[in-house]
Image (cartoon, rainbow, N blue to C red):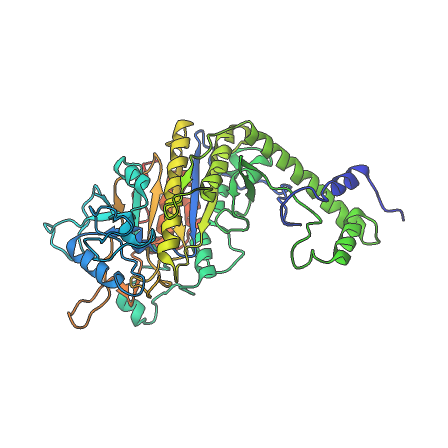
Length: 524
């Protein structure tokens, strides 16, 4: 029997050799079924998940600065070979060679917190009081990391909100329940593990293969645009294989990020890197099979060719749409530690997201979800160097993105939120911090009820038998979350327009929590 050798198939496959930069055989296959029935939105909305990879130390992102909180913060963090305590609000930056009036240290390098000045004060619209405090007790005060001045401005302008002490939970959990669990108490599995907590934050489930929060939100609206566009152009990632944008119907379309913006990822069949692709024998055999030059090549090669024709047509459509939707380049980023101008990879990712949002009219869907990331925030050591630079990049990139979306008319339609593996220990290990649990996060956009802190900001400080201090919100050196990731995602999903029946399927644990809508978004 003669094997079929259609020109289109061979041309398509031969064209893949040396054709791009993506890992081989990781394809965007658009030949999939239509999504389930869903709402048909007439407006446009986008959600952008900014993942802080490695576990950001949220204790230095948002700091309680009232006297009692600050004293416990300072005691826990101004110690060790390299103290990581930030300076109190109002502290002027201390030049190198000068003595800081608060710490009494001589500043000898730009990675000293004294060099950056004090935390940036913010005043939430809703007073936050310590747990158990009398109604008339003084409100607590707060500050953002000193290298996030743009986020301070966004908070004061009502475009940025903070969510306090959020983390992975199966159900509400108290300190007593966590420390001495009884039958029926549900403690999340595999806490403090990077991979497991990243997946739980992005999908609600431990382990790979689960559908993502964002992808499932996209599934609800996939039927609102006809054809393959609703499958391919609803969910996006700039970070490779990630859980958040993966849906049952929508596919996490990978955006390639370059110096001039975004474009489609292409497939290089014979890329010469990777555990298999460094073998000439393997590459030769694979090429022969897919091109139909051996006895087994016909069926596999034809299927691969069909998929690749569709995938590359999709890539061409995506790249063309982005090329016709220019956005402004990010402003120059200055490294706060070196003073040098350098690339901000997060700003580049958000530029590609901005292009895709502006191109949504050409691409089709009126609901889109995006996943971007920056890291590593795994600051077991060198925290002053690493976290300060990363948060400065976050501040720069988010300010650029919010301004660009506003300039393009999408200021009210795009919401960006932060997420991370977990927070880090309240105490220092001498040069950094270790894995912990509950964290504070930021939500940015015109639809955000900004200028406020949502959720109960926890009591800070570690238990001290000598003084009798017992922190109800902390076990050891880790905060026990009082708000769940499920509540966080549900609040975003409601604003996105996900109907309640669909929401129950995406977040089945939500009924365990008394407040499914945390209130930080405007009404749908």
